[in-house]
Amino acid sequence: MPFKKIDVQAEIDKRVETDPAFREAWENSRMEYKILGELTKLRKEKGLSQTELALKTGNKQQVISRIEKNEQSPTLKTLCSMANALGADIKIVPAS
Image 1 (cartoon, rainbow, N blue to C red):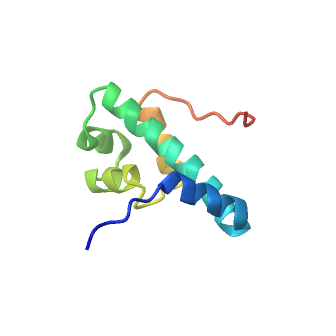
Image 2 (image 1 turned 90 degrees about the vertical axis):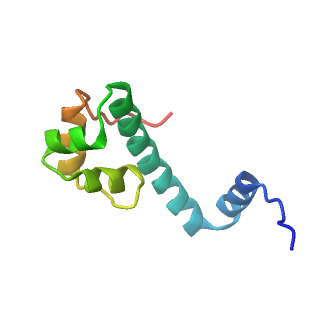
């Protein structure tokens, strides 16, 4: 059985336009992915392993891994400790 090629972005765009609940969930998850992606990128740029970041934050490596894969939502305290350990600030700015 051949696979059908799907334009995922087009499907998302269509759902965003037609389903208000999906649109809200999509917008909320995009912000979460963006923040976690930035923290992961910064960790890698600093040459830290997940284990090293975990030690600096008082967490286990598995917790850092689950957070980075968005399998677990970090508490605000954990998010701040990760940012502090990476020498970063969390800043809220108006959306552009």
